[in-house]
Every structure is written in C-alpha cells, then in structure tokens.
Length: 141
Image 1: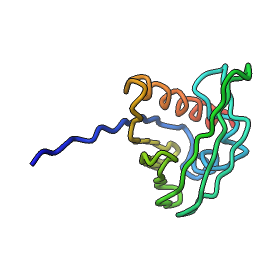
Image 2: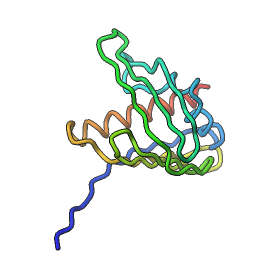
Image 3: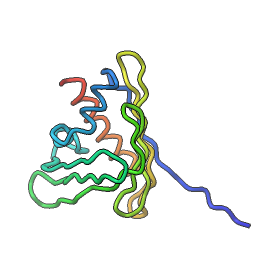
Image 4: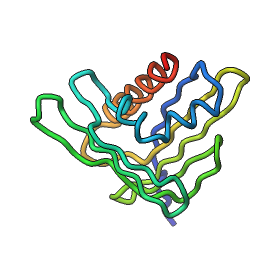
C-alpha cells in the first residue's frame, strides 16, 4: 500500500502584545482591513467575520491600482478563544492558526495546505508577509 505524505506550509511570528489583543485584532473585520495584505501595493477593502464553528469569513484582497482583486474566505471548523482557529478555505484546503500566550507576547503559528498553482516558497512568502504586516499593525495599535 502506498502512502502519500501531505505537504503543509507553516509561517510564524512572535507578536509583542498579549493574546487577548492579538485575538481581537486578528478577528475584528475593522482591523483585518488594516493589515491583511502581503505588500504595500495591495489592500483589503472589505472583511466580514462570523467567528464560530460553521461561521463564514470573507476578505477582499485587491491591488490598489484596481487591476486585480479576489475574495479569500472559508468556513470555521474549530474556534477556541485566544487559542486556536481552524477553517476550510473555499477550495477545501485546511488552515490552522494557533495562538500561544507567552506573558506580554503571543506566538502565532499558521499551518495551511498549499494550492497547486504557485511554488511552495512563493506561498510561504506571501502568507509570511501578511503575518508580518499583522505583527507590525498589532504592535503599533
């Protein structure tokens, strides 16, 4: 019997803020629109988040010059406040986000199933850039 190892991608950051603040800024639509982009020439003009098992979320990600946009969304499969979020993206790929309180800092670890179009390193780089933007936004607000 053959088995196929499933590749996942992990990105992480240590945020200089307590877990309660990290959780609030990660999940509040009014905050998501301020940090959810991989580069300065992109933005997130819309976000909606129903943070509960079975709840849906959607974030519109768009090039600032109007040349391209897409909706990133999914359905929550597990939510443990200040600790864990798991969801399935619209295409069925799984994502897990773990929040690890460490006093006045919080570790955030995202693990996700890659898509099949772009190279793994490109996907990792994009998700890490968004997480780095989140870190910067959280530490400055």
